[in-house]
Length: 69
Image 1: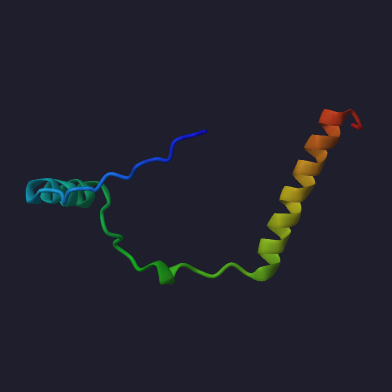
Image 2: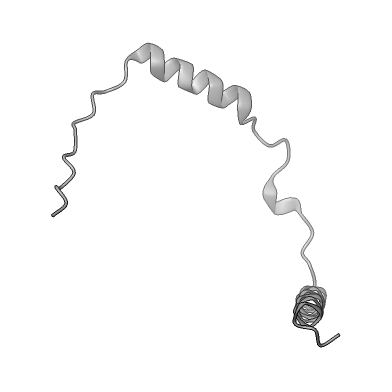
């Protein structure tokens, strides 16, 4: 029988560790300079054409791996 895992109570992090965490996060995860909603929308037909192209490439790959091509 596997013994249950005992959860240890986590102590709150000291203020210096929280400050260091925020500093590292602010350094590595810079804010975007532009809003995400400004990106142009992709037309539906282009999305479906890309999806069909991916399916065709995968089908050709598997057909080649099986030996049909």
